[in-house]
Length: 332
Image (tube, rainbow, N blue to C red):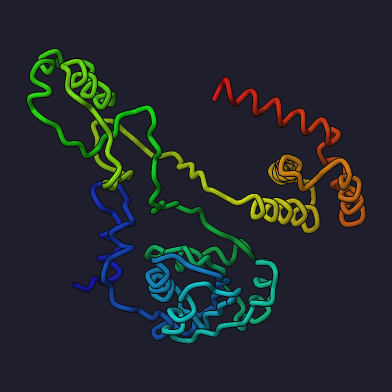
């Protein structure tokens, strides 16, 4: 069954008050090209990519539905998947070969230089636009010359939780007779989120065997559901594995990029530079030997940043790292 944009909006609401978007992500909707009915409002859209996620086509559907796209300008930074093949199925797409460029910023520059309309949209490949987005954005053209809107972050990842302390919970199998001796001790009072420990303890105290198996699994879902108590997810912390080589590159790009292109007039930027430099010392990329060279580069590139560089000498940074590691051992 295909749904209209209005019906998609209803899907995104889920149960009352949830504003769940996941139904819309996988809804079977017809392709709508707003340019066909409103070419007079059309704008170019730019997207630099090297890869996309499984919702790439869905996201493109939302762009064409919401935005009267004059041209969709794609910067191919060396795609490692089928993103280019997918986007070429859409109308008025131009793909630019950016595989020789080293940075995202330069790709964006070249895409903006290729824009033909007075106004343009820069959107990430992992963004889905809700109904009404373009109309609201366009109303603010008189207020700003470059502006954005807040994001509602949706997390769709699968990861394993190594559990060395707790019993495995969520999908368990048990022999009823293993519970008969101790089950009567459970009163209607406090057993709640610790039920995995309580049930395992009952079994073991009765002389039966509790265990963990490793040759199958289940999918656990962390998402909104109605409860007697208000539970609003405030944030999700994703602990990603990043190789030392990748982190060194990321930190160098972050610190040098901020220092070269921005002024030290924002506390968040100053903090980010300081944290990146600290981490480069921890990773061994910055050392007492090359620290003077880095400071010289700062002096030649944007000397206003010199007073905001970490003031401690590099060997003190090493001591601080060791102290923080020791603190984490005892207090994490």
